[in-house]
Length: 312
Length: 247
Image (cartoon, rainbow over all chains, first blue to last red; front, side):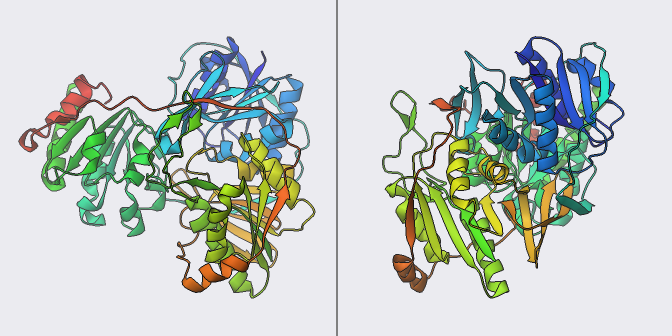
């Protein structure tokens, strides 16, 4: 079985989800794999630690144009006689993986949650309320891996970096502007998420949420009403209509836990809920709960997190 | 401007999720079906707004499914679509849905194809991109804002820690996410008009078969929640560290 893996490496750092995808591809292949990527990262050699033996990079491509990138991936797939193409189930992957699947008439697993069991891939359906086992019967498979699905391998290995020399044609999409709203850990990659809801009473009270997230090395998120009232930016909104995330630890403060919110966070490994209302539905989905006011509980959590950090 | 909106039927957001036939099929007994919220609230409504702003054009919806989806399709017409198409097929995977839609849309000269970012049942987010590939069109997923000026679309999409503003020439396929429009509740006039608007049924196209879901399962039941008294709130951090081992 020949496996290649497509990742987005436009930034300086190789994203966590990309390292996971390379690890996953190498585990699927049972040995080192070829990585296909685009952008200007200077750290591509480091992917040897995750099981890459060769990286083919299209340096000139700086934006997500699904058609250019689909051609890139399909060219490399042909060259490497790939039978499995691994992608990341993120914004870039969603623009490319289904296109590659349609072009190659390949079955596509959108959001695999781990390695296959008896040839079947598990993925979330019904907004995380159930899981489906999928079988791919076509000669070529496209597997998009959900972020936070497997631990990153930290091995050793040397990598040959090759520049892609084919012609990708002109981009049909142009980027006019990128508005950065933060520099923290991207929410879909965060292993710890501290999230606030209406119980926080106003945007001016978010300093505590931010401080706790920072102390724990996590990211901040919010509920839909909070984003709708513009207390927080929309890209922080988790839930049915926002982002679906699956961190190791989700701490919800002042969020009641409506079914639409749970759809975005019910895949978290551990959920802790702080709410003044003991009847809040979120407690039924939680592992840990505190009935209490956010403004009483948050300072205590911050104090405890500082203490923990001092000890470790 | 000629706009095609991909409309999917899904179980209501609060529907009970259960399976039958040895967990191979969704149990639809007693379930209310709705238009996939991303298709309805964002894709369809934005299509109508763009047509209204232009003062001309048409909005066509397309659904792949059996006659049991007709009531859902009429909802789209009641909200304001001009006409609806149903491809009479029972797809078993995303690629088949895309192939049916592309077979219909090919050579019909749509300027804009709008889909919800994903359906709330399969959550694949694949069909829009696959249709784009099959029609050789650009595709922008996860778009939270869409404007059209002449033949150029300006699209905003959320990226990690920010927003990206893109420009792309029509024709294009767009995956609509929250923010693109506000839900429209159909009024009585719309509901009456929907009864007489055209709903054309077209035969299934030839499609590929690359696999699909073979079994469903429900997540294991959550254990009891461990409550911590508010006076000892700091203990939560300790438990997350020593017991749950997640921080």
